[in-house]
Image (cartoon, rainbow, N blue to C red; front, side):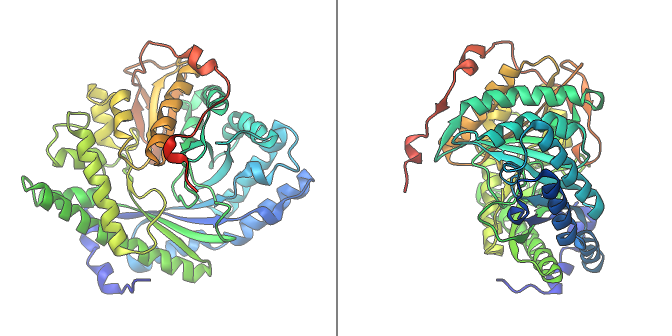
Length: 456
């Protein structure tokens, strides 16, 4: 492990004070396998008790580290073992899973975290009865809880894509939107589907505690789009080699901050340290935008020709800089492009420069995928499934993580605005095209793994 001292923290003061550098999240992963029971009441009690016991000091520890080191720690979060596995023995109906969701949400409220992730199912090879029940329960679970987040992994390079689950999730997303229509379909902002999901991801809504991890683990997510943009302003017009070096060096500095916070949090909580996720995760604040970084590289706005190339360069150099700074870089490290959480992306979407087709192209080189995209409320379930299938295919063929967090905002049309509040921001409703894919999505079965997936 790299040795870090306080002098390195002091060097980042200007980044923190003027350039929006922050530790976006400390996420405590908690394994729940020892809570499994075939009695629902006993299961709910065991889950609540374990989370509240293990995470009792998480929030206060994060706040103390932030105060002492002068580093903003924006969120404290919990991820748990995918609940479809934990609830399989006791949950015999959708209502049973919803009850378990309530216990998770109450535990999160008791310890005071911002989000709890892991209301999840991993179904790339097919769905168990418990998987199906949990997936069907998602609309009710997300509409009756406050900070619970849900994710479903639908495919992988090794397994292919479960198209039955893709079709099902199109309907679940629409149902979730309808259940939370009075909040601009906010429930969908807490629901994401993946291809090649990673089990050490500290970022919501996709975080869950992987089955290969220890019983507890601390993962930290660091973010600093403003820091990177400011660094690039100083080399405006320079060569691509200088551009790359500048991003890499900046990512190195940011990762060191994350390493410090992660090791300190792990020490104080007496929990193993997992990974630092260096992801340029934007916020709606001015000066904290990935789109602005792309513009600083020479684009007039995100979505212009050259956007995908610029994003590929950014993503790669961020990873390289992080890997130099820590041997524990993991998660989804790179650049996120959530539309509603990035004021530069919002502006480009409003102007029409950033379309869903261009966003899809960008996902082939960014850290995740189609993220926080608001679409018309009358978008059909089949069309949502088609969007998901396209993104799963990009992930499967390229051997990378891709995701979809799309929000059909009930009652709103193209050109109108959805308001989600806080870190989730707002988003213009963008068109998804008039052509349909109903017959394609209606097919049953799976898309098999690609030739690149045949590995021992």
